[in-house]
Image 1: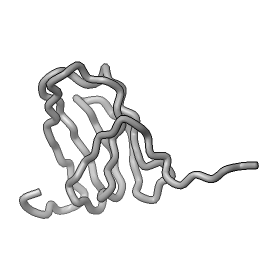
Image 2: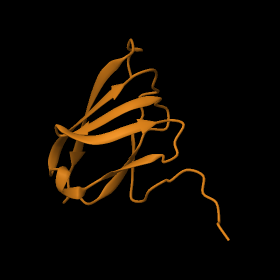
Image 3: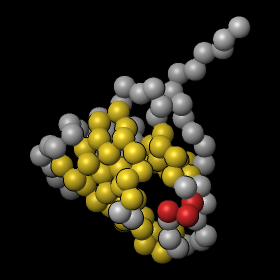
Amino acid sequence: MPHQPAFPAFLQVKLYMDSHPTDTFVKLPGWSKGVVFINGKNLGRYCSIGPQQTLYLPGPWLHRGLNQVMVFEEQETDGKIQFSRGPDYGMTVDVQ
């Protein structure tokens, strides 16, 4: 980010897909609390305290070419968004 925005704030980025989009997961590791929108659709809420650390993004919500990612952040961000093939559910425990 070129400058630090005032919060709360809407932040927008463009995601370019050069191949056929598939299901993916969105992770916002340096973000605090807010909502993610993909191409005008509400993907979901996130919170840094968890428990889950990723949001599921269905492939059909993405388009080949440019996609709009809009994030409403309430408190703070480092401006980095990660996309991954698998989920991150946060800390897990084995139940026996």
